[in-house]
Image 1 (spheres, rainbow, N blue to C red):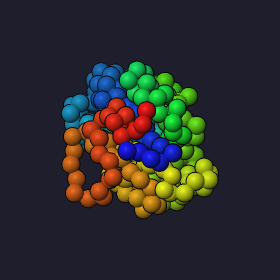
Image 2 (image 1 turned 120 degrees about the vertical axis):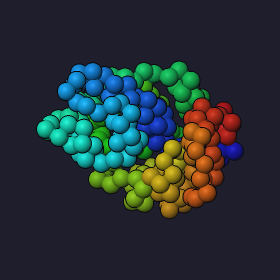
Image 3 (image 1 turned 60 degrees about the vertical axis):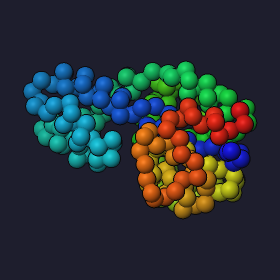
Image 4 (image 1 turned 90 degrees about the horizontal axis):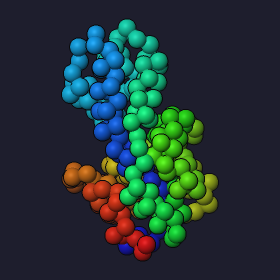
Length: 209
C-alpha cells in the first residue's frame, strides 16, 4: 500500500505513451520529407525510446538541417498527436483526494508543459518540476533534493513513479524516496523498486482510493 502522502510522477512513457506518439509523429514527418531514405523502423531504432541525444538524432535523421529547427518541428508533431486518456485522468483525479500529486520530468520546460496540457492533465498537479527549468535533471540526486526542499517534506513522505529504472527509480532511491516502476512488461534484477506495475492505471491497486 502506498502510504506516502506525496506522489511524484514522471511524464513521458508514464502518463502517456511517448514511443507511440513519437512513432506517429515520425510517420507524419517522413511523409512530409520523401527525400529522406530512412524507414520508420530505422528512425525508431535510432531514437531508442528518446535516449539518443537529441542533437545527434537530428543530425542522423537529416544532416543538412539545423538540429534545433528540426527538433522543434518533431516536438510539435509529437504534441499534436497527443490526446487525453480518460482512464489516466480519472486515476489522477481519484488520487488527488488523498495524495499531493507532483510532476517531475526531464526536458524542455515549454515542450513538457505543452505535452501535459495536450494530455489534459495540467490541473491534476499541484507542483510541476522540469529539468530544463531547474538546471538539473534526473537521475541527479540534486534534482530530487530540490523537489523535497520546495515541498518541505522528507524523503519518506514521497514516492517516485516512473518508467525509467535509471532516471526515475535509481535517482529517487539515492535520495531515500519510495519508488514505483511502471515496467510495461520489462523485468530487471537491479534497483529493486518497492512497487512494480505494468501500466500506470494499475496504481489504484496500491492506493486507498
